[in-house]
Length: 349
Ligand code: CUA
Image (tube, rainbow, N blue to C red; front, side, top):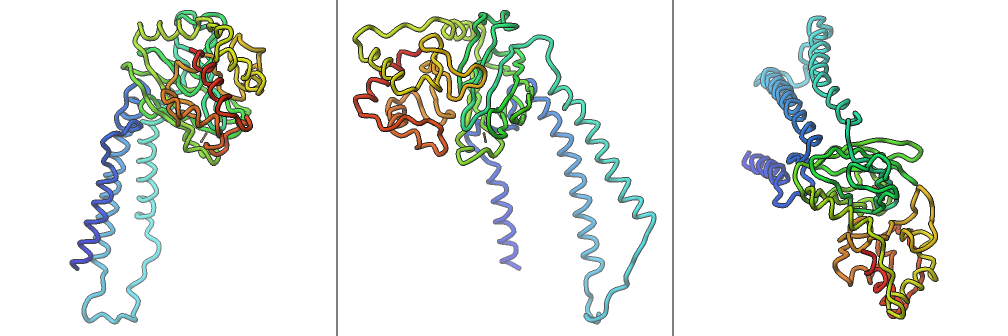
């Protein structure tokens, strides 16, 4: 008996401890935006209903176990009285769950529609899911109210948004199924090749919200993270201005200028766009992250490496395969070449 109690309390402790987290940036139970809050508001009554059902079922089981257990003097070989067919009971256990499910769907359906509805006014962003990173394009058309010019803005991994504004995203995939998920701002939305899905985000407060791909998409699925950076008005204006400012050309004869040449020699611009610097690459489905303002971000390669740490980017240039399934092929670089490339990349801000 004692060991049973011990085992049971250990199991209980595991469940309780598993729900503890000191730092949980992807906790869906602490929503920080309009849409995530709608989901949170919905999950409370649904969870309550589930608790009532669970308690009811457990009590019935306990009752059956106690009442029909083998009593002293019973013949263990003799079957208890067998029952079959109780119309009232059968109708009861068909109708009752149907009513419970009807109540849950009455609560759920309006929220599902609300979450996919196109807002009246919004910042539009095209999102590309690819193995294993996220690309973002802010079209100029329709986004004038948010300061975005005709050329639009292209970036990757970090999605920047203004606070208190609905962000309406058009999600596409160029390869396999991914799922866009920034838990504190909204639920998950699948990103499916050949289809166009839409999804919304909104943040109440400025801050950085982490997210990740939520659909298994290959060996580096777990390394397909993202960040949503929400700005107040001034911060947003600053970001937009910086993203739209023309790049400064590297000074002639500098290490960065050599890096600029090397970037083209190695064929980097065949996949990575640097807006205006080299000839345009693939029109609407970028095959590699846009690097135009690379150094305005602080993470890269699906947000798993720290861009503020020079060593991380150098290690990446040395071996992009350190992230399994990376499509980047650059061949072996000398340390001198890495220095030149780094010097150029650093000017992309
Ligand atoms: Cu993309 Cu998992």
